[in-house]
Length: 319
Image (cartoon, rainbow, N blue to C red; front, side, top):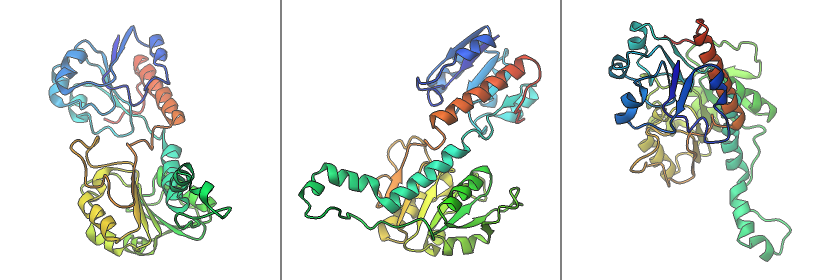
Protein backbone atom coordinates (compact mmCIF):
# COMPACT_ATOMS: atom_id res chain seq x y z
CA UNK A 1 0.00 0.00 0.00
CA UNK A 2 1.35 3.41 -1.03
CA UNK A 3 0.74 6.67 0.80
CA UNK A 4 1.40 10.18 -0.56
CA UNK A 5 1.43 13.38 1.49
CA UNK A 6 0.89 16.36 -0.81
CA UNK A 7 1.74 19.23 1.57
CA UNK A 8 3.49 18.07 4.70
CA UNK A 9 5.60 21.11 5.49
CA UNK A 10 3.15 22.99 7.72
CA UNK A 11 2.65 19.94 9.94
CA UNK A 12 6.30 18.92 9.92
CA UNK A 13 8.85 21.59 8.92
CA UNK A 14 11.60 19.26 10.13
CA UNK A 15 11.14 18.93 13.88
CA UNK A 16 8.93 15.82 13.76
CA UNK A 17 9.25 12.44 12.06
CA UNK A 18 7.06 10.62 9.57
CA UNK A 19 8.83 7.32 10.37
CA UNK A 20 5.74 5.90 12.06
CA UNK A 21 4.25 5.45 8.60
CA UNK A 22 6.84 2.82 7.72
CA UNK A 23 5.10 0.38 10.08
CA UNK A 24 1.72 0.97 8.45
CA UNK A 25 2.27 1.14 4.69
CA UNK A 26 4.68 -0.38 2.19
CA UNK A 27 5.81 2.96 0.80
CA UNK A 28 5.25 6.62 1.54
CA UNK A 29 6.29 9.86 -0.11
CA UNK A 30 6.17 13.29 1.50
CA UNK A 31 6.08 16.51 -0.49
CA UNK A 32 6.46 19.84 1.31
CA UNK A 33 4.01 21.45 -1.09
CA UNK A 34 2.27 20.47 -4.32
CA UNK A 35 1.27 22.84 -7.11
CA UNK A 36 -2.21 22.30 -8.61
CA UNK A 37 -0.77 21.04 -11.89
CA UNK A 38 1.24 18.34 -10.06
CA UNK A 39 -1.53 16.84 -7.91
CA UNK A 40 -2.61 14.12 -10.35
CA UNK A 41 0.92 13.12 -11.30
CA UNK A 42 2.04 12.79 -7.69
CA UNK A 43 -1.13 11.01 -6.57
CA UNK A 44 -1.64 8.56 -9.43
CA UNK A 45 -0.27 5.48 -7.66
CA UNK A 46 -1.49 6.38 -4.18
CA UNK A 47 -3.80 4.13 -2.21
CA UNK A 48 -3.85 6.72 0.57
CA UNK A 49 -3.74 10.43 -0.22
CA UNK A 50 -2.93 12.94 2.52
CA UNK A 51 -3.62 16.67 2.33
CA UNK A 52 -3.65 19.68 4.59
CA UNK A 53 -4.71 22.54 2.35
CA UNK A 54 -4.16 21.10 -1.14
CA UNK A 55 -7.64 20.76 -2.72
CA UNK A 56 -8.84 17.26 -3.62
CA UNK A 57 -11.65 17.91 -6.09
CA UNK A 58 -14.12 15.59 -7.77
CA UNK A 59 -12.07 15.84 -10.96
CA UNK A 60 -8.96 14.75 -9.07
CA UNK A 61 -10.72 11.85 -7.37
CA UNK A 62 -12.11 10.62 -10.68
CA UNK A 63 -8.58 10.46 -12.14
CA UNK A 64 -7.14 8.37 -9.29
CA UNK A 65 -8.35 4.79 -9.82
CA UNK A 66 -6.17 3.32 -7.02
CA UNK A 67 -7.31 5.76 -4.36
CA UNK A 68 -8.91 4.10 -1.33
CA UNK A 69 -8.56 6.59 1.53
CA UNK A 70 -8.10 10.37 1.99
CA UNK A 71 -6.59 11.68 5.22
CA UNK A 72 -6.76 15.38 6.06
CA UNK A 73 -3.99 16.80 8.27
CA UNK A 74 -6.38 19.27 9.90
CA UNK A 75 -9.76 19.52 11.56
CA UNK A 76 -11.35 21.35 8.63
CA UNK A 77 -12.00 19.10 5.65
CA UNK A 78 -13.62 21.47 3.13
CA UNK A 79 -10.56 21.08 0.87
CA UNK A 80 -11.86 17.62 -0.06
CA UNK A 81 -14.94 16.92 -2.15
CA UNK A 82 -16.36 14.53 0.43
CA UNK A 83 -19.46 13.76 -1.64
CA UNK A 84 -17.36 12.62 -4.59
CA UNK A 85 -15.22 10.52 -2.28
CA UNK A 86 -18.29 8.94 -0.67
CA UNK A 87 -19.69 8.04 -4.09
CA UNK A 88 -16.45 6.15 -4.75
CA UNK A 89 -16.60 4.46 -1.34
CA UNK A 90 -13.51 6.39 -0.22
CA UNK A 91 -13.57 7.38 3.46
CA UNK A 92 -12.20 10.81 4.40
CA UNK A 93 -10.76 11.32 7.88
CA UNK A 94 -9.81 14.47 9.73
CA UNK A 95 -7.96 15.35 12.94
CA UNK A 96 -10.41 16.51 15.64
CA UNK A 97 -9.61 18.66 18.66
CA UNK A 98 -5.82 18.56 18.53
CA UNK A 99 -4.98 22.28 18.93
CA UNK A 100 -7.53 23.64 21.39
CA UNK A 101 -5.02 24.77 24.03
CA UNK A 102 -2.60 26.02 21.40
CA UNK A 103 -5.19 28.34 19.83
CA UNK A 104 -6.45 29.55 23.20
CA UNK A 105 -2.89 30.40 24.22
CA UNK A 106 -2.34 32.65 21.20
CA UNK A 107 -5.57 34.51 22.00
CA UNK A 108 -3.97 35.55 25.27
CA UNK A 109 -0.66 36.15 23.56
CA UNK A 110 -2.40 38.88 21.57
CA UNK A 111 -4.25 40.20 24.62
CA UNK A 112 -1.15 40.37 26.79
CA UNK A 113 0.78 42.15 24.06
CA UNK A 114 -1.95 44.79 23.93
CA UNK A 115 -2.08 45.19 27.72
CA UNK A 116 1.64 44.88 28.61
CA UNK A 117 3.33 46.09 25.40
CA UNK A 118 6.24 43.73 25.94
CA UNK A 119 7.73 44.08 22.44
CA UNK A 120 7.50 47.88 22.55
CA UNK A 121 9.34 48.14 25.87
CA UNK A 122 11.91 45.51 24.96
CA UNK A 123 12.74 47.37 21.76
CA UNK A 124 13.03 50.59 23.74
CA UNK A 125 15.57 49.00 26.09
CA UNK A 126 17.55 47.64 23.13
CA UNK A 127 17.59 51.15 21.66
CA UNK A 128 19.26 52.46 24.84
CA UNK A 129 16.28 54.34 26.30
CA UNK A 130 16.63 52.68 29.73
CA UNK A 131 20.35 53.35 29.85
CA UNK A 132 19.69 57.04 29.19
CA UNK A 133 16.76 57.27 31.59
CA UNK A 134 17.03 59.11 34.93
CA UNK A 135 14.41 56.80 36.40
CA UNK A 136 14.50 53.13 37.41
CA UNK A 137 11.45 52.50 35.22
CA UNK A 138 9.52 54.31 32.50
CA UNK A 139 6.51 53.66 30.27
CA UNK A 140 6.43 53.91 26.51
CA UNK A 141 2.72 53.11 26.60
CA UNK A 142 0.13 52.61 29.34
CA UNK A 143 -0.04 49.12 30.86
CA UNK A 144 -3.37 47.68 31.94
CA UNK A 145 -4.74 44.60 33.71
CA UNK A 146 -6.87 41.85 32.24
CA UNK A 147 -8.36 41.36 35.68
CA UNK A 148 -11.76 43.03 35.80
CA UNK A 149 -11.99 43.42 32.01
CA UNK A 150 -14.75 41.79 29.97
CA UNK A 151 -14.00 39.29 27.22
CA UNK A 152 -16.71 38.41 24.72
CA UNK A 153 -16.38 34.99 23.11
CA UNK A 154 -18.21 34.57 19.80
CA UNK A 155 -18.69 30.84 19.25
CA UNK A 156 -18.49 28.55 22.25
CA UNK A 157 -17.11 25.21 21.16
CA UNK A 158 -14.00 23.56 22.59
CA UNK A 159 -11.72 26.50 21.86
CA UNK A 160 -14.19 29.09 23.12
CA UNK A 161 -14.53 27.07 26.31
CA UNK A 162 -10.73 26.89 26.72
CA UNK A 163 -10.47 30.66 26.27
CA UNK A 164 -13.14 31.13 28.92
CA UNK A 165 -11.21 28.94 31.37
CA UNK A 166 -8.05 31.02 30.92
CA UNK A 167 -10.03 34.27 31.17
CA UNK A 168 -11.49 33.01 34.43
CA UNK A 169 -7.97 32.47 35.78
CA UNK A 170 -7.18 36.10 34.88
CA UNK A 171 -10.29 37.16 36.86
CA UNK A 172 -12.01 38.47 33.76
CA UNK A 173 -15.75 38.76 33.25
CA UNK A 174 -16.75 36.36 30.49
CA UNK A 175 -19.61 36.87 28.05
CA UNK A 176 -20.35 34.32 25.33
CA UNK A 177 -22.57 34.11 22.29
CA UNK A 178 -23.42 30.87 20.53
CA UNK A 179 -26.33 30.21 18.17
CA UNK A 180 -26.38 26.61 19.35
CA UNK A 181 -27.17 24.99 22.65
CA UNK A 182 -24.23 25.24 25.03
CA UNK A 183 -22.75 21.75 25.25
CA UNK A 184 -20.47 22.88 28.07
CA UNK A 185 -23.27 23.72 30.49
CA UNK A 186 -22.36 24.23 34.09
CA UNK A 187 -19.40 26.58 33.54
CA UNK A 188 -20.93 29.09 35.92
CA UNK A 189 -18.52 31.97 35.32
CA UNK A 190 -19.66 32.35 31.69
CA UNK A 191 -22.67 34.52 30.98
CA UNK A 192 -24.40 33.73 27.69
CA UNK A 193 -26.00 36.75 26.05
CA UNK A 194 -27.06 38.24 22.74
CA UNK A 195 -24.41 39.15 20.18
CA UNK A 196 -25.49 42.79 20.41
CA UNK A 197 -24.85 42.93 24.15
CA UNK A 198 -21.54 41.08 23.81
CA UNK A 199 -20.31 43.57 21.23
CA UNK A 200 -21.18 46.66 23.24
CA UNK A 201 -19.93 45.48 26.65
CA UNK A 202 -16.69 43.64 25.82
CA UNK A 203 -13.17 45.01 26.22
CA UNK A 204 -11.88 42.12 24.09
CA UNK A 205 -13.88 40.18 21.51
CA UNK A 206 -12.44 36.78 20.54
CA UNK A 207 -13.86 35.05 17.46
CA UNK A 208 -14.23 31.26 17.51
CA UNK A 209 -17.02 30.66 15.01
CA UNK A 210 -16.79 28.62 11.80
CA UNK A 211 -16.92 30.33 8.41
CA UNK A 212 -20.44 29.81 7.07
CA UNK A 213 -22.90 31.81 4.99
CA UNK A 214 -24.24 33.37 8.16
CA UNK A 215 -20.84 34.25 9.65
CA UNK A 216 -19.09 35.45 6.48
CA UNK A 217 -18.22 39.11 7.01
CA UNK A 218 -20.20 39.25 10.26
CA UNK A 219 -17.55 41.57 11.70
CA UNK A 220 -18.32 44.56 9.53
CA UNK A 221 -18.62 48.32 9.88
CA UNK A 222 -21.85 48.08 11.88
CA UNK A 223 -20.33 45.47 14.23
CA UNK A 224 -17.16 47.49 14.77
CA UNK A 225 -19.01 50.76 15.39
CA UNK A 226 -20.88 49.10 18.27
CA UNK A 227 -17.63 48.13 20.01
CA UNK A 228 -16.01 50.29 22.65
CA UNK A 229 -13.34 52.62 21.31
CA UNK A 230 -11.00 51.04 23.86
CA UNK A 231 -11.84 47.46 22.79
CA UNK A 232 -9.73 44.95 20.85
CA UNK A 233 -10.76 42.34 18.29
CA UNK A 234 -9.01 38.95 18.27
CA UNK A 235 -9.53 36.52 15.38
CA UNK A 236 -8.07 33.01 15.44
CA UNK A 237 -11.00 31.41 13.59
CA UNK A 238 -11.27 32.15 9.86
CA UNK A 239 -10.29 35.28 7.98
CA UNK A 240 -13.56 35.43 6.06
CA UNK A 241 -15.51 36.11 9.27
CA UNK A 242 -14.11 39.67 9.15
CA UNK A 243 -14.74 42.31 6.50
CA UNK A 244 -11.11 43.31 6.18
CA UNK A 245 -11.68 46.68 4.53
CA UNK A 246 -14.11 47.69 7.29
CA UNK A 247 -11.65 46.56 9.98
CA UNK A 248 -8.75 48.43 8.38
CA UNK A 249 -10.83 51.62 8.30
CA UNK A 250 -11.95 51.11 11.91
CA UNK A 251 -8.35 50.78 13.04
CA UNK A 252 -7.19 53.83 11.11
CA UNK A 253 -10.12 55.91 12.37
CA UNK A 254 -9.77 54.82 16.01
CA UNK A 255 -13.19 53.20 16.02
CA UNK A 256 -11.58 50.38 18.06
CA UNK A 257 -8.25 50.24 19.87
CA UNK A 258 -6.63 47.38 17.97
CA UNK A 259 -6.83 43.91 16.50
CA UNK A 260 -4.90 40.66 16.78
CA UNK A 261 -5.29 38.38 13.77
CA UNK A 262 -3.91 34.93 13.06
CA UNK A 263 -6.03 34.48 9.92
CA UNK A 264 -6.74 36.45 6.76
CA UNK A 265 -9.23 35.98 3.94
CA UNK A 266 -6.48 34.84 1.56
CA UNK A 267 -3.48 32.93 2.91
CA UNK A 268 -0.74 33.69 2.20
CA UNK A 269 -1.78 37.27 1.35
CA UNK A 270 -0.42 37.37 -2.18
CA UNK A 271 -0.34 40.93 -3.45
CA UNK A 272 -0.78 42.33 0.03
CA UNK A 273 -3.76 42.86 2.31
CA UNK A 274 -5.37 46.06 3.58
CA UNK A 275 -4.70 45.01 7.18
CA UNK A 276 -0.95 44.61 6.77
CA UNK A 277 0.46 47.82 8.18
CA UNK A 278 -2.88 48.94 9.62
CA UNK A 279 -2.72 50.91 12.86
CA UNK A 280 -2.50 48.80 16.06
CA UNK A 281 -2.96 45.57 14.12
CA UNK A 282 -0.95 42.47 15.04
CA UNK A 283 -0.90 39.71 12.41
CA UNK A 284 0.64 36.25 12.73
CA UNK A 285 0.86 33.75 9.83
CA UNK A 286 -1.87 31.26 10.86
CA UNK A 287 0.25 29.76 13.63
CA UNK A 288 -2.28 29.41 16.47
CA UNK A 289 -2.58 25.67 15.80
CA UNK A 290 1.11 25.06 15.23
CA UNK A 291 2.74 24.63 18.63
CA UNK A 292 5.11 21.67 18.73
CA UNK A 293 2.83 19.90 21.19
CA UNK A 294 -0.27 20.41 19.02
CA UNK A 295 1.52 19.23 15.88
CA UNK A 296 2.81 16.18 17.74
CA UNK A 297 -0.74 15.37 18.79
CA UNK A 298 -1.93 15.89 15.20
CA UNK A 299 0.72 13.51 13.88
CA UNK A 300 -0.21 10.83 16.41
CA UNK A 301 -3.92 11.08 15.55
CA UNK A 302 -3.06 10.96 11.85
CA UNK A 303 -1.08 7.75 12.38
CA UNK A 304 -4.04 6.30 14.27
CA UNK A 305 -6.33 7.24 11.37
CA UNK A 306 -4.06 5.49 8.87
CA UNK A 307 -3.62 2.43 11.07
CA UNK A 308 -7.36 2.09 11.60
CA UNK A 309 -8.00 2.31 7.86
CA UNK A 310 -5.36 -0.32 7.11
CA UNK A 311 -7.04 -2.61 9.67
CA UNK A 312 -10.39 -2.07 7.97
CA UNK A 313 -11.99 0.03 10.71
CA UNK A 314 -11.47 3.68 9.72
CA UNK A 315 -12.00 6.30 12.44
CA UNK A 316 -12.66 10.06 12.43
CA UNK A 317 -14.52 9.66 9.14
CA UNK A 318 -16.28 12.83 8.03
CA UNK A 319 -18.15 11.54 4.97
